[in-house]
Image (cartoon, rainbow over all chains, first blue to last red; front, top):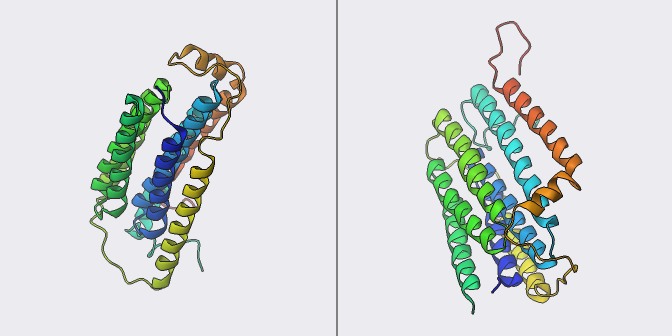
Length: 101
Length: 173
């Protein structure tokens, strides 16, 4: 009564690829950020799957820290979006090239 | 085919479908609502992989706190549906797509070959209990645990400084 590791990894690969698609092809900063969160979650799923196979709690510990770091990242990232929006009135990444010259 | 596998595959399919909806939808609010469904489906997957604590964290912290923060900011910025802007480099998207397909194919090939090859470490398999996880967090992982609290404080301060309206005369951003 357990889930085969291959199924876990296939779902993880599919989610990661979709997240990569969103991060590279979309132009809205919020959607890009959501895609990055999706990729983080795909990696978390793979880690939990491997952790269950290997035994012990190392995998779950790693994923716990990954979730905390993702929360911190979301807070700072969204604050940056609000700051950029105040200056540019848009967060379309085609129109904001603050770091490019 | 056992029941756990059936439920996991179902949850995985739901997660992938709604992730696809998230990626293609032009309205950021609807993208957000789609990814909430994906995160709930992933929580189901965590339960089946004997990590119920992570499933709870996934629902409470991810779907609850982080995505509500996203929703709050999206509505605060009053983003309209993404308009089609003329791409200055249209070939970029094509190459990105080719790269992603190649990447996914490569990973899938690797998974098919080595998916069942991971061996056990001899440690007892994780049960659903929270207590051993807490033991691991507060003994072996005690230093990262404390470091993460500093990280949270730093990101809180950083977010406050970024969101603060600068007074007239003070330095810009």
